[in-house]
Amino acid sequence: MDSTLLAAVRRFNRTVTQRVGALDDEYMAQGRPLGQARLLWEIGPAGTEVAALRARLGLDSGYLSRLLRTLENDGLVTVGPADQAGGDGRVRVAQLTAAGRTEWAELDKRSDQLAASILEPLTERRRERLVAAMAEVERLLIGSMVVIGPCPPSDRRARACLRAYARDIGRRIDGGFDPALSKPVDDEALVPPAGVLLLATLHLEPVGCGAVKLHRDAPAEIKRVWVADTVRGLGVGRRLLGELERYAADRGARAVRLDTNRNLTEAIAMYRAAGYREIEAYNTEHYAHHWFEKELRQ
Image (tube, rainbow, N blue to C red; front, side):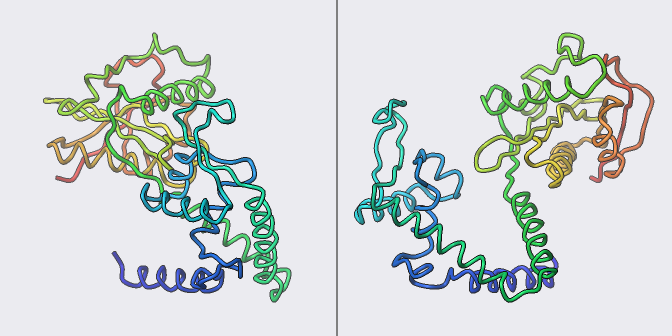
């Protein structure tokens, strides 16, 4: 990794943490550190499932429990089973008390004041530049938070992604998509050593997938590459493609190939930008109009 890039990220982190008051013992003079204040904010007036808090904030279970215990001891939060509100008793939910809602409202007001203090010294044009830059940084940071890893095709999250893939394809190609007309991809073909399915997750929720089938005497075959609208444009599809290529190369494949539909213009552009060249049809896929191949570095 380029040391200049690393230094720039570290410098940005130092500036932001200082400017937003993350270094203060009492975040925005509320009498509690940033971690407790952020957790209080995320629980919100409507309450939140503890599992959702853990996933959203990326917190260790033990640390989250300690933060919640502190807020409970301060009389700001209660934690109990969801069936207290008519839900699933196995699910734990954090709720604000009356005192917690009062502090949440004060935190909300002071957060607006902090945001105003950042914008106020700037001209209108510089405010617009700053807010636009913040939005871009936020999107790129979200992209960097996406995790990609192997997942059994029978996993519920993988199934959800494959169903979303079929729905998305059905909306975009001429005449819709009937899985019965498409060449099947059996689960057994996506389990090592035959192949693999990779799952992309954000806050533990699935946002993308892709698979590769390995063949003894033919190039590996990439299948079912899909990315959710929520993370489209953040490079997740290209990362999935690169990880699938790497997986195939590490297992001896000298090339990978794939087929796609003419209506999937963004996918076609991505494949070409990633070094794929168009080839003659190598299968009889009902929905394919283009076939691509790429040589892999060993």
